[in-house]
Amino acid sequence: MKKQLLTLLALLLAAFSLQAQPWPASGVSGSGTASNPWQISDTSHLASLARYVNAGNGAATAGVHYRLMNDLDLTGWDKGDGKGWNPIGDMSSGDGETTGFSGNFHGGGHVIKNLSINRPTAVDIGLFGCCNSGSAIDSLGLSNVSVSGNAHVGGLVGFSNATISNSYSTGNVSGNDKVGGLVGACSGSISNSYSTGKVSGTSEIGGLVGESSMATIKNCVAANDSVVGVFLVGRVCGNNIMSTLTNNYALGSMVVLVNGSAKTISSSTSGIDGGSQTLATLQMQSFYTTTGNWNTAAWDFTNTWKMSILTGFPIFKWQTEAPF
Image (cartoon, helix red, strand yellow):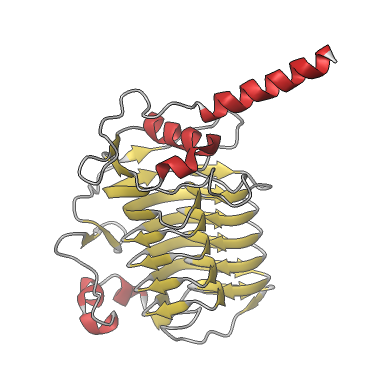
């Protein structure tokens, strides 16, 4: 009996310790309001946010604002288990409400470089693992990601009910089910965002989004080198379940393989394969600023975007091209 009581006490203390993860972390300035967001200035701040949310404090992030203050390089960052970055938020609570991110993350036009995750048996894998309804991510770039998981795998978010805008991911993403270059499974919205690189998996595999379920995806570009899966594969999204797809484009020369064979592409800006465009067109600023291509919602090259002289694709207005 004494042994059982000690075991129970240890479990209770462990649970309390998890939820007691402190926020703000040491060195984080701000108050979490829209006018004075919590300021994420280095990788330790970002990792502290992941630990805080994953400890069961997801609901406490609802309505709270966070802002990335600098470009970050995650080269060599590891949770301590040899598998790389620990995603911000997951679905371990069942509904995601307690362990999913529910706040507003403002990238500030900054870039997170060299995100590496190698968790092939895990779900909800990306920089953010799970984002709940009411959350938002904007103006955030990911460069040179290497992300591997099982299900709900994306460069930016694994499972998303968030509003995502003006964001991008470049690099390679792989998994089994619901795998996308930017988002693995989306039931929220994505606008004016893009992905490049290689995406591979088994089912529901897409250049931008793996599965889009009752979501809204508009004004986006999938410029991936290749998208490879066994079934339910698409250039923009692998599978569309009652979603609204509008004004989305894809690289016409993208390699798309379904069970080893080249997919017959149906080019449509409202379909899972997007409207075909040449690489030259996707690397022209005029393509993004021509209102007719985006149904009155052209990309903002006055305040948000500029064209990269290195990659040829849009990057943030204040983004440096030099290594950081």
